[in-house]
Image 1 (cartoon, rainbow, N blue to C red):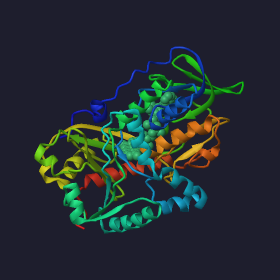
Image 2 (cartoon, rainbow, N blue to C red; image 1 turned 90 degrees about the vertical axis):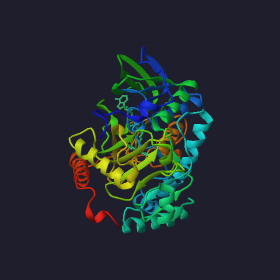
Image 3 (cartoon, rainbow, N blue to C red; image 1 turned 90 degrees about the horizontal axis):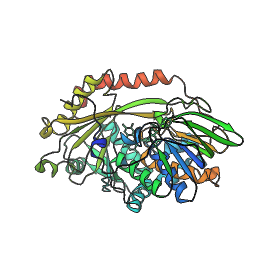
Image 4 (cartoon, protein in one colour; image 1 turned 45 degrees about the horizontal axis):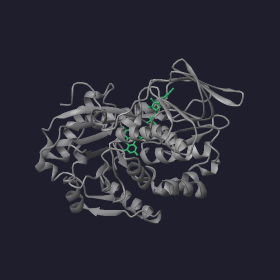
Length: 430
Ligand SMILES: Cc1cc2nc3c(=O)[nH]c(=O)nc-3n(C[C@H](O)[C@H](O)[C@H](O)COP(=O)(O)OP(=O)(O)OC[C@H]3O[C@@H](n4cnc5c(N)ncnc54)[C@H](O)[C@@H]3O)c2cc1C
């Protein structure tokens, strides 16, 4: 059985810690950042290293949102294959985005090394697993498109996939040897620590409650104090708390939950993901698995393990683990937790300008470690003397989504129904 209450593994094991007291006085800065996830912390680091004065305000604690809850797969590009990106954005903008994100893992792992971030980095690849014959066909198409986009992917057959994962469940897979895994909360805290060392002011427990324009500057209110800023970055993604004007983000909130076992015995560690790759599959109701430094197996799937369907998702996790790894059938789970993904209808992130010298970035649609790091960095440059042309995407004046609540309920219903009947007889063998 899972643990009695939710507990986030990444919080329990982060080797990176931080001291960022609440905002305690009024200040004036070049750049104010709302939100302390990958996007906000990367922007703070880039801006402070460039000599700007920076105040980052975080409602809870650094990494409270998706950045401290995710799987930790450091993948290049978006979740969408390159051809779909080009179809949605057109050749010029699509190519610009693909180029900006194609070396995302290099940027993240180089930053980790440069700043000495203690976040369990393992750069030995990630594996996209075929859950069905259709999934395998899709992976072949991704292989071709990835190769055209300059990635050095490997298509693995069933035997190689079984050897790398230790599971007999898959008929093939696509491996990206340049990708890898991290402890995501520790990475986020490490970015924040590096930003502080570079001179940025970071404040936890400082929810921004109002943002207004005043005399050509932005005025933010948080924790009973005011920050005046020449430029503004809103980096709250799926976790934005209400601050009214200047702009309301619209996206579809989709939950994803993870379940971590106690550390595996040594003989199983040698057979299960022996090289430490992180994995996810091609199913519509997707799942993922990886290990951490201590040798826990961390299994994830769409659905909210902290919501009404908690028992269904927990039961699924137990059965899914047994199916993937019969030897782990009785290994207890010691942590489980959920996170919220900001999905857009076309699965492309959005950069919106809520006013002059201001950007809001959101909608990573489940692929945000490299994109958040890159978008944050580039947003800082664009806001502090650069141009919109420095950004990976064109800046929009707004972004609307329809029926977001209904679509979110549909995702959760689909995940709960799928997990309730798992393993479905037709999904057993491909
Ligand atoms: C369960 C899960 C698994 C995922 N797995 C992966 C993965 O393996 N690989 C990958 O690349 N991506 C993954 N993602 C996506 C990735 O985690 C996100 O895209 C990324 O974390 C977004 O970063 P961010 O900085 O934009 O937002 P967040 O990390 O969500 O940070 C936003 C912050 O803003 C703060 N905030 C909100 N309102 C206010 C306010 N009014 N005042 C001050 N602060 C405020 C919040 O408290 C929060 O800390 C996953 C996401 C989830 C949820």
